[in-house]
Amino acid sequence: MADTPSHHLIYGYCRDFVTGESLVDTDDERIRQQLARFLVESKGFDREDLEVRQRIETLFSGQFVTSTIDLVVRLAGRRVMIVRYGPGSLVTRERPAVAAARVLDPDVWIPLAVVSNGRDAELLDTRGGKVLATGLDNIPSREELLARLKTLDFAPLIDPGKRERELRVLNAFDRELCCAGQPCPLPGAPEG
Image (cartoon, one colour):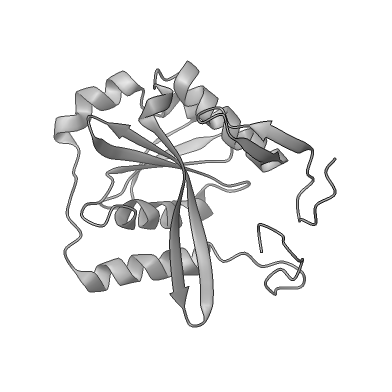
């Protein structure tokens, strides 16, 4: 194992399935890589359809937070779906995933969001936040998304107040706390 201060066991380095770049190898990263591989090998997406590790930075009430969108699916030149991984309960991941899909593109909402813990998944409509389907097998395939492309709602986010509220949701939900409820003091820890 690598000798790096972190909250996670670090096994060394791994190769990103989509980009080939070297990443710190943790249990969470292994699941993220499994999700990317699943989208390509089981759902028919091309690696070129996937954008990895997109970031949204927020600063509210003195709390700087970087939210990461693990995967973004782009088809026909449009971002159509995001995928966010998080361990544990999916219900607690729904609202920040919807918020991320609503603000990642500055001009339009990304219509679909997936939250997954690696064993299960929920497909969400980002317009109303409704769960459309559950289970990894119910994540839409490339073919299904292409067929639905004309019916998906790429609503513009016109109201700047709404955009700020969504950014505040990300800031609140994605703030990482450790070490007795405080931000991580470990020097150089990528999570803190």
